[in-house]
Length: 275
Image 1 (cartoon, rainbow, N blue to C red):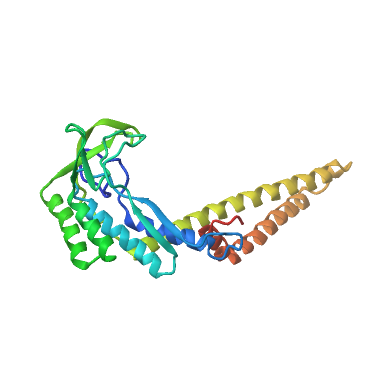
Image 2 (spheres, rainbow, N blue to C red):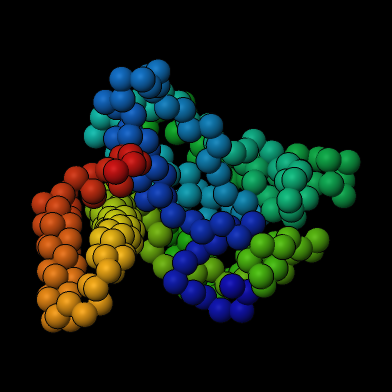
């Protein structure tokens, strides 16, 4: 993470920058609870969304792209009633101390906690006042990121090599050249991939359970057969034929069930239901 550009961009606190994830999360929650008769959810509020970025290079684009993600979810029917940016001024992070800088306002701890507005402060104020994100705002914000990449610039990084431990003093990391701007199409593809992956896991679990049940049935039936006096002299071919038939029948029944219920399984995974 520290020495070279990689496929993903990360904030100072080591969190991947992925606006499509916010869109996917809102969509997932809406699909899970929209038709749930026991749910009391009427709308959602994004209570904390922001990036640690003392350079303020990524923050403008981060704000714009995540707001676009929320707007797309709203356009598709997700009831979002509020958005809170994290945060107004640099703060103490429980795990990382003062190293990551989340604020729209810089706090100078070496100069009596003097406050200085970062450029992103004006951008967010303008978006809030006009209740919209404009094309020029998006273009200008992303141009800042591209300029930093082109210049080979670096930004602070507060995460250790293990990806978990924090650092008392930030090190420098190059800006990634990945285009991490919001794309609803990309988010939907990722959602579908995850759904298929979870479906395969459920299918595998069901198959394993079927095999275990079938084995238990076979052991029980043939245990009863073997307990009958004299049955050990019965034609071994008959035994093997019956055993193969039992296994084949079990696999055929459950295989047909899995084939016919693949869509049900996938839908259940997406909705977070048990099958």
